[in-house]
Length: 97
Image (cartoon, rainbow, N blue to C red):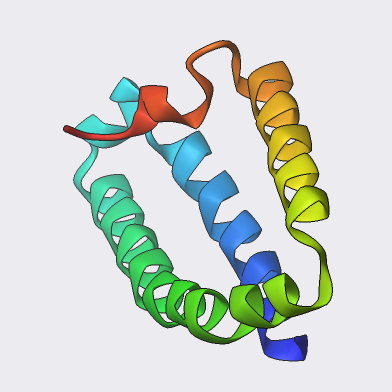
C-alpha cells in the first residue's frame, strides 16, 4: 500500500505539471514541449505497473473483504463523484478513441 500511495502522490504531481504545460503557448516552445513529453513518459512509466498491481493484487483482495452489494454501492458512489467533478461525460471525455 505504501508504494501505491507514493505512486498516487507522484501521479498527481505529474498530472498537475502536464495540465499546466499542455496549453497552446507552452506547446510551441521547444524546451517546454520536451519537458512536457518527458513528464508524460514518466507518468506512463509509473502508471503501467501501478495499474497492474491494483488490478492483480489490490482490487481482488478488496473484493474478497466486501460484499457484492457493498462493492456495487461503492461503484455507484464513485460514479456520482466522477460526474460531480467532471460533468455528465465524466472522465470519458478525455479518452482518445
